[in-house]
Image 1 (cartoon, rainbow, N blue to C red):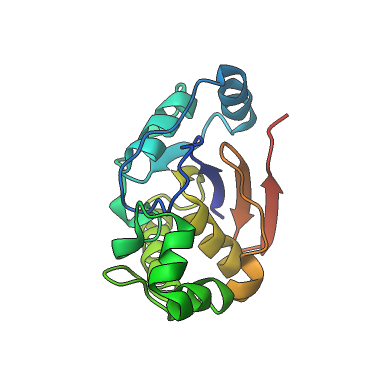
Image 2: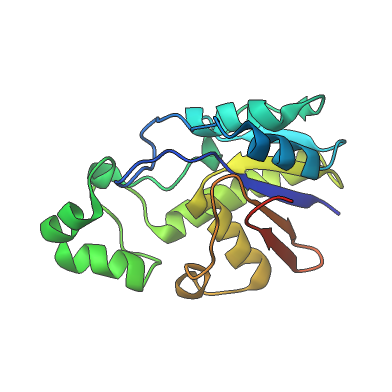
Length: 190
């Protein structure tokens, strides 16, 4: 039985859509990083998306844990032309589409990007692949807000609209076990 410990990367301080655009995480709160590392299981494997903010966060919590190769399938949602653009500007550019993207997530797709459903399918394939390669292990996956939400959705059987109400803070842990249907979100490590 594989247990996933989804860690959201450190804060980026971005005030715009931040998907596949590669920005670094602020890991200057070393106390928070240490508490997070200490909270995670010592014998777990560590994997991250291939974006710098996740890679560097994973390195900060790795300790003596075995590191798997960075996985591009664990990247944040691809926001296409919206990436790097402030939310209000996107709403001006595409008022109906931007509203539908958040209010009825699923198939609405940013220009040049991917929909919620496409992103969720990409992440689900990566999760199944990693579970098949490392059955029964604890996996620490350092990833992104949207990625983690797709997994909360899958484990709890929620709609995309309902799962968007979940809070996933930077440097938080969301522990999920699909076999048991259990989910625990810890937004601030002890």
